[in-house]
Length: 139
Ligand code: RB5
Image 1 (spheres, rainbow, N blue to C red):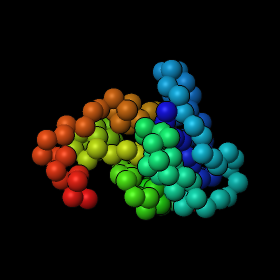
Image 2 (cartoon, helix red, strand yellow):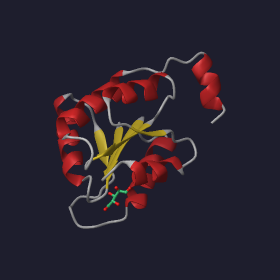
Image 3 (tube, helix red, strand yellow):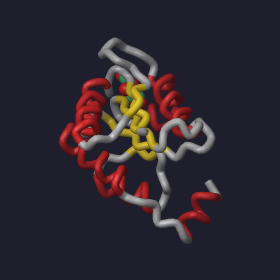
């Protein structure tokens, strides 16, 4: 189960990502927001973070205008490692080396097609473990 969340700026991109997940047969829980009406990104970043930290969801995807605010919010929840990624390579490395469990995206930064590639990379790449596990444990 993937936790999805966004603020108003991220809402249109969240719809695209939800469609993509469904097309791949992947289940998600939607933690809002569900319109383009202005809201506060910390509420949604923390909701996604809590869903992942509690074990209700395996991974999360959180979207705001830049990905910055919502990643900061998600990272306030203990156990969350949120990575704000603008390329598929960043998403790949966030999984391989950082064992990121929340992907943050900026809907005003990244085009939907690129965002889908970033999501695919994040979901498909396993954590490498080994020396990286020791470093992640130090976070
Ligand atoms: C909303 O205008 C914007 O501040 C928010 O989406 C995000 O980019 C914050 O980091």
